[in-house]
Length: 431
Image (cartoon, one colour):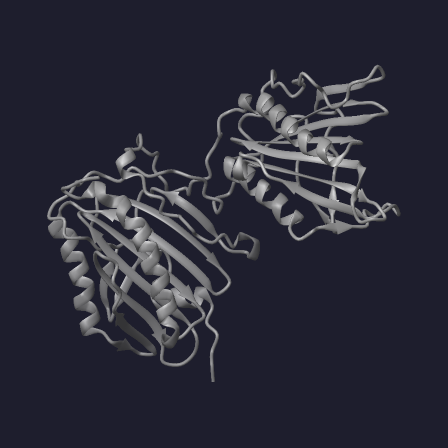
């Protein structure tokens, strides 16, 4: 009979073996720096966030900036704002889903600002919202993309013709999203009337620009360029990123040394939508107790270290842990890796647990092993790599068996191959 084991059960059974951990392997470099790691400090969404930003939108924020050729230009304009109570960007649904960009509906006077120019010929509405952190602002951009995904047309809910949706490319990457819709004509081509939106982020601010007007397809393509130009006029005045959501055990980070920048959270999967955690790279005061790892009663992690970075993500039947430490000397780092190998040789199993060492070529001094169960599902795969005085520990948990370990080993090895070259600052040769 197969037994499903939750991530929490795995942590308890292995003294948090699948939680965050730090170890490392290294290359053949004989000596390296012993400096404390200087981390790239990013938002930690698992820490309780402030309900409001420390700073709202600046009083002189240029939400009413004007283009040389404005989208609404006739003699019967109505101007509203800028003000928190002004009419700005309007809500939008796409295929029955709300598109969660900032709008003037339900505005908070401290953290929302709107502005609009309207006439019988068109509408130019803008709303900017200040999120508590840059991470929340970035997540808002992702939520917009998710709401639009797969929606090519819908009925609009207004009893008129179907709406045809389109997206438009920009040079701003993930920091700007341009899209719009037009009414469908009998020949299936979008009619001139419709809406065009650009949603853009800078720091903690997310700006929505909405234009409603009539025009040809060529006009609308040119209008996207104009919207992006307008965004460039407005968003350079965005405030700093504001408060960070680092874990409460994080130390203030020193000025980063570019040679020691490590993208520890690269390619980490965000499963917060399924109730998981997503903690990007940060520097803890102390290694959390939950990172303790033992093999048959022999503690192999944490090790004595001079600096540390952590990143981890969890979800249903899933965890991904990346832990990076620096040691006082190459000898100490080599000894730490050898201690794991020795523990594996002496501990092939305990009770219902099975420890297995695997072969994997990372190009560095690495040890790769897994923890599985004699009965039931649950597999944690570990890879520890040393680069000079640095130790990189990677682990992943999933609902697998020993027979499925190969895929997880290949995944950790690929990640090691991405991260290890960034540790060259801890080798004698340097970068």
